[in-house]
Length: 612
Image (cartoon, rainbow, N blue to C red; front, side):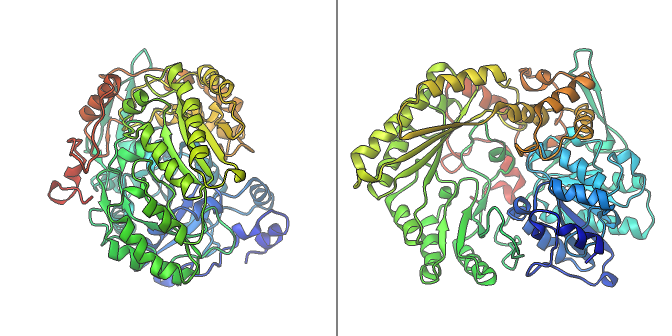
């Protein structure tokens, strides 16, 4: 261990975050490696190690001969202060080597509020922040993840963007880099060649111009770059890599359990949900394979809990037989099974009994999203009030006494009547408990939580204006004043971060200057209340002559060129606009298993058929 690091660790909280050496972390002989990949997660160790995507790509790259992928996490403030004081640069956990010495630096970006951490990590590594100031091919800075479906706010900082699922795209990019390194290519040569790879977007090969009104007037490809870059997709989930043998953390992490991925994509088509569109089409893993992977992962790790993961786990078509297969191992070995993303319209007593058989009865969580059926139809939630009440009836009769309900405020077409409908629905859930619980003396805990709607790219609501913070606060007050039952707890999300998220999620390249200014003035860990400073960001907008309301609170027109015009997730923009119109008409679109709605994403699969 570096003597500076050893000295530092005694002075920081949670030193286990920074030492590496975990069971099953990959170590390789440097003499046999010609490409080193620093996989950077711009948040704490506990958050990053809970990310299944990071574990998958870590395994995929380390299975490549001659390639060594190592992990890098953002140090918490106390560790960063000590590192800067001692002159210790950002390093990778497996080897302890400085990040700046790696060939490729890859950032996994699932949330826009991590952008300042990207800059902070580059600076801690001793690297220039902007791609233009890093003239060589080493290190090559890559970004991927859900956030990069609009990569423009980070465009000046990264060299390459990997769109979609990286299991195939990253190995191809790595092989191209190895060739470039062996043949002494220039950075321009490498970037031009990279732009020809499927799913790879090179921001520097596109020129963006703006009109006098601040709206984008043109996005022009250069040097043969494609006019449209389409995401990469794993078509056969049974052949895709799953990390059965994976790192077992030495310190507690946020999701300290086996994470079993049932399928990718979502059949539902909720009009506000970016993940539901960008992960299309649905692709399942087979039940038999999942049983084997789940059991093998428990045996390899020693975990006593397993989570069945997907955007909507209860939509897995063979869920009950899957639970039966897993429980044959889990019950005698005291391993509990949890389903974190249940839907109110397909929760059954049989499923509830299987969850109880796993040995743990946690609270139930559902997301009706809206308080009225009219608004649920507008957002295409496809869940009725009766679905929710029947589910609660089943759960309360079965002995459950805790339920959490998640909603959004500020959804398109929302009225005060819709807001008050949330309080009405919570009250009806309470009465369902009173009428169905076998034991009233235990009481009931009903938690209602609301967040502020954030319009996202590649959704039918990408053209919508976000409610102003004042309007959101008014709706919170309206709901709070009408939530008087002592058994119902109301929590609401502060609008400041949602406002900034709306700016960044639909921002253009000019926001890069705002991000850099905010970072220089202390912004980092913006998703953490301990660090987030709204005023720092508002000052950064003002310093760069940009109005945040232009990005957050402005409705876009149908013909406006959106910053992510070059990026395609396979869903046709004409389909998204049609879905937006359907929202205003209150028309629902059936789920993908009931009827294909022709969004276009199925063309990304072999033969144009979804595997859901």
